[in-house]
Length: 299
Image (cartoon, rainbow, N blue to C red):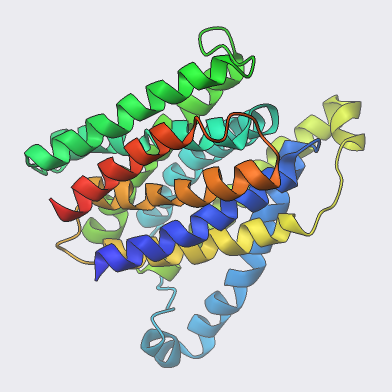
């Protein structure tokens, strides 16, 4: 069941990435990110209030936000800081790079998760899983070759380094999620609500600082319908992802790879909607990544 929940998370993440690209194009990224988090917070606020006044009902619906100790709040705050840094880097990179380049690089996240799962959780992959992960990495390298034809040189483009750093931080957060859900026994709704709240506050501080320092930040924001939609889709994806992690048999390395099937939506639909170049050539490494995910799923 946790694999199917992971696929549902991938579906919503794929649509989320398309909306995110629309939201940040020629827009002020920090304010856009804050807007998505506010939308997510407003969606989760009734869940928090319902857990306060109707706890038994919310437990039946698997939406209960449990009371937390100060140390548990501290652990969630660490996750919020990691993901705030990851999102700031990713949003800036997405603004300056094609979605058909950004999404495949983000697809290397399972490789970082794979290494962490080996070292931290002692998860042991078989030969097919090894093959699948290296297929993903080789395919991302092929994307870098295609990216040069679009004037994107991976060695000198700072936004490439930004998206790689964002990917590493996101993978670290994924490993940390397993600790929060399984070791601290947090419910998905608990982690979602407080994570969204703390991340929103962190980004709010950044936005206020940027607006005070930069005229471009104050004048560069344009409201778009896709901004709240990004926040809503992310909360749906996170809910299914955290529900999957609740299963004691769930392997974080495999779940991370399953989520990357979102690339199918981003590359195929994104290339068409945003009229990006070399769509046919990008299908070759795309199928390489999908083959890698297939080997992991069915190994």
